[in-house]
Image (cartoon, rainbow, N blue to C red):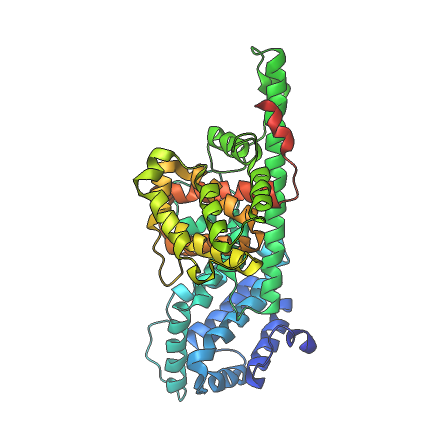
Length: 428
């Protein structure tokens, strides 16, 4: 077992390794409740732990000059040793949020009378810092995707409780550059499971809709639910909204073309552009084709044109290449959605949704990704920034964001997933 941990936690100190080994052994032989009790005694209280040598090792770790910067990563890994073990056994999943919630309860209020008083106070301060860290925030998000069942009811809930529904956000919301290999593997595994289930549920729903349509074509008075087993809408969109979303992303929306066809047509045409500057003019026309003209002419068209005009203006005379395409599209997404975690302003995005609705707004973003698929992770990152920004907000106040997240889920499944929903076209 001692050799298993090194690939997951490179460059660790010997003292940390001993704690990891200690927890790795115990989590295999003790119940979750016993481990949670141990965890609280060792890390939250810092006293009366059964194995005094383990306490001594922890004191060495907290006394290190690097503890201020490194302890949060050490403790995060300790949590993951338990989480990863319990995650492999579905019947133990409920223990995961219990473990993470431990940190919400401060140590017992008793006077510290111990020769370790300084070490205990140091531990308590480091735990407080851990609670305020990105690592702990991500742990709390992780519990949502592991333990939250899929629910069609989302009113009066915090956005964070819907985290499980959006697998395309996992890598950006649940991983950092310090995430261990094992943590990355766990997140990837859950992502694939949730994504596959959603695509399957969406396919079943579409099949049900097609069959209902076929029955009604023969006899419009028949009760289809008596003949066909109803299939639940797998999204949080209304049935009308979901059907419109699927139709938008599968059907003909740009004249005689689907978004996929229109994007390919644009790419073929843009390859003939005389310069990067000329390409940006063509891109402007491509983007505004689905925007209501009355709304656009008020200021959106002007602002979009200015954005494109100022993008890499020094390269206007060059021929379009992959670098220019990727940079242009990524800066477009900054403009249309949100710039960064540090500056999460999203006025343009809100304005688009308020005037054009979530579906047209999502479609506009999809059009950009379809001409430059390399920026798909970049678009996902923009939505992760918005999700993190609003994760504590009640969903009733941000229905526009929930709808957009749901529609993007459908759009990704149709255009980048493994499910063919093209037969949905026949009912329109």
